[in-house]
Image 1 (cartoon, helix red, strand yellow):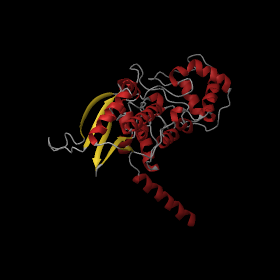
Image 2 (image 1 turned 120 degrees about the vertical axis):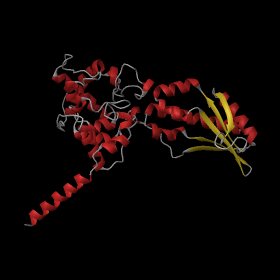
Image 3 (image 1 turned 180 degrees about the vertical axis):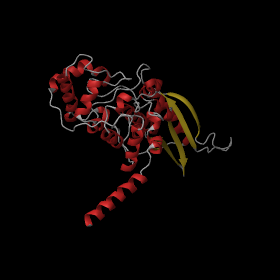
Image 4 (image 1 turned 90 degrees about the horizontal axis):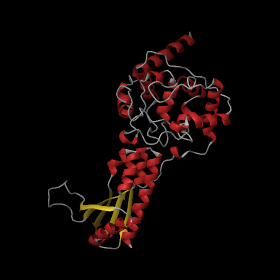
Length: 346
């Protein structure tokens, strides 16, 4: 009788949890649709509704991918609850009539050395010589127009934690129809060759942390430096310092220009805009989202007789972009800002 009561209570609890769980459509729309498409058709992210994707990934792979993200790539880790993630997984599966595949967690034992050779011949063109994935983010012109998706980073810790060897093996054997990923069996490789490639891909776990997983880290949101000069002199010094760092001056204006009636701007708060067009082009080709924070700018303010120079710390933006290549540019721009402000204060 006691065991029966416990069974009833557990059943009721499971039923209540299932009823409380979201249907997945709303959390998907809030967290996934902007990259993967409202109906899973893809865009910045891979097409999740693609039949060849659905039959080669497990539910566990989807759960771990949502939770862990892809460090240093566009997909960030998630703080969603387990119930919300489960709802999203169910929603993604609603696009397929096929049951979710199950994959063994057993490691495949292949010849990684031979797999390295095969990888170089068959995989490196898309996934990079060291598994770093396709260049760019897949956003508009940062992705070659003839590619429907960007090749994922196979050396990424998020991918390696989410994908089992047997899932990778199945993907290599079947390919992904609708993407550049072809079946390796149809391309003439043997199953033993595929096992060797899987073993090589798995060896990325023992390799040093890849640059594709590195993000710039800083706690300082705003770069700030005192100026020993008055407001007007400091503004001119910033312009000259920017020019000496090969930036082109664009304009100077009151910080609150356009936000208050004309003529009522605060004369003690100015912003200087400048740009390096070669750096701008490089950044936009890597990730057009950086355009939201360009051109470069330094704000000069006078308060209580003291003059300060300020700029948003580009390294802080690394958390927003979640893109290692762009993070390197954020670090470079941080160095430029500090150098310009230091020179202006000399």
